[in-house]
Image (cartoon, one colour):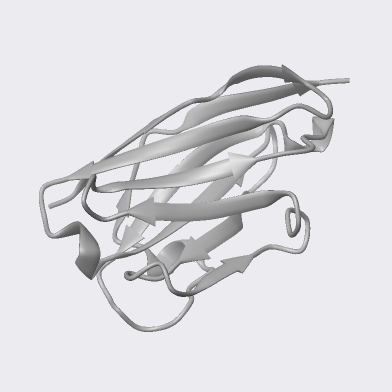
Amino acid sequence: QVQLVESGGGLVQAGGSLRLSCAASGRTFSNFGMAWFRQAPGKERDFVSFISWSGGFTFYADSVKGRFTISRDNAKNTVYLQMNSLKPEDTAVYYCAAISTRSGVRTRIGDYDYWGQGTQVTVSS
């Protein structure tokens, strides 16, 4: 089992920045690919970003490319999402997820084995 706990959400004005963290425990963190998803009110949960087990490969949804940066610190069992130039449409609950594979990028919800409880991000206009 892997436990994931997100933090860092909050209320920010458009154009501002937030940094989300996801702390993992329970199994060897470096064996997992990690991702961030988000779910806005009344909408489906969408893929945001993926990072490979080593951190050497990252992938982003077009909607956040150039504004968000995913990273990880395997020594701290933590993955981060730096969000810059935030827009009101970025408002959502953000979830981190773990997949127990060292293979390539995964963007589908069903691919992931473990999920955090989510953290709310609200961007005001």
